Length: 392
Image (cartoon, rainbow, N blue to C red; front, side, top):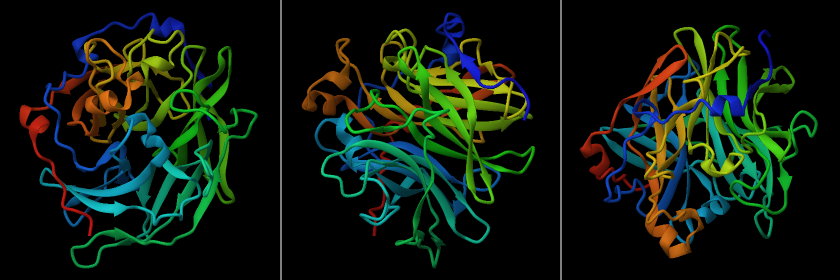
């Protein structure tokens, strides 16, 4: 390992943040986009990867996983019912392939974000966050990293994942380098983190790593960090963090790495409410760049900001993920009305402003330490039906 660790994301960096068209997503039309799943909310999504990080294609379709929950009640409560769903994308159409795991087989009371990679033997390593404990009477917030290894079944034209496989806890916060993520009470933005495992194979050494959204001790009780673990013969070895939000943010989410032109781009997202003080920087995709996985990392665009929501719609989208092709996926979150914070509204008002489906993809250009949004979605990408075939 080389470089200085961990990299510290500081107020000095955020003081350099300047709103610019190059780092601002285009505004969504006022009309709601049709849902991929009419009766379910869909949010954090990730493609099944090949070993080189490229999205996998099976029977001509890209395979994706996403969190889902019935579209009922306050949207903020969807996290209490989240399960991972398998979808196939082809010809501008989504096929709903149903839940990835049979009910009651995962290790938590619900399933939070993760990643997946197809193995040479035809199995899929699905890494996910087990939130809470299976069978608990009310949701708690213990978080562990779990792997399941179902076989990818592709008989005929059907695609499905084997059910009933073993789920193994492979990683949890150590309580020393990382704060324990084990609260009984909490909610979005109010709990410590050890979640969102992102699988990555470093082309420099051929070894496998997991990046994890974590928490470390800080002046506000805890602060966000990017943890990393390395695969070893006896399991996964938890290493010191790659990056720490040094007193400026308490919740970094969905960290991931893209290698482009021999540089390592470390991306993550966070909300405006997670900054100290709250609202001192926008909800967005942020990132750093380094010559190796281990650093030294520099903030992109001086501040770290890569994509923010349009200022008039600060909660328009969330959960950005940069693919190896430099396309960027996210989901439609809240449309604001009259300057109100929709997440704090009542259930009916919040539900009326909630997107709960995929946003059209953006294209990103990376040039050293600079980035820019290359392409705005075409009008038909916002209005296309995108209706899936139902799960069989």
